[in-house]
Length: 54
Image (tube, rainbow, N blue to C red; front, side, top):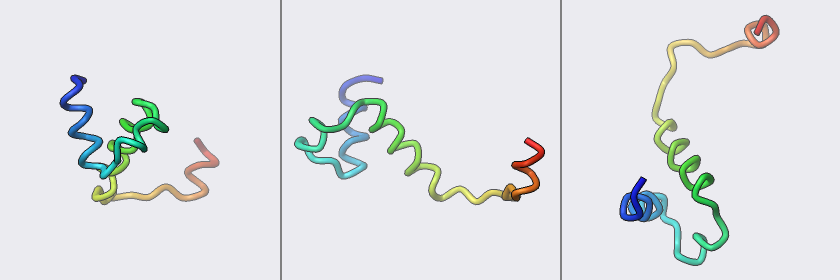
């Protein structure tokens, strides 16, 4: 990831320069990934039985 792309991701997340001092690059990448996954609807949701057999 290039610096301009990283800063674009930060802007898309609405992070300020002050907040960037408190967060790591990995955490910001995770935040962006989670934001992109918010709109996904899954065909099947795991139940407790599924987790038990896992």
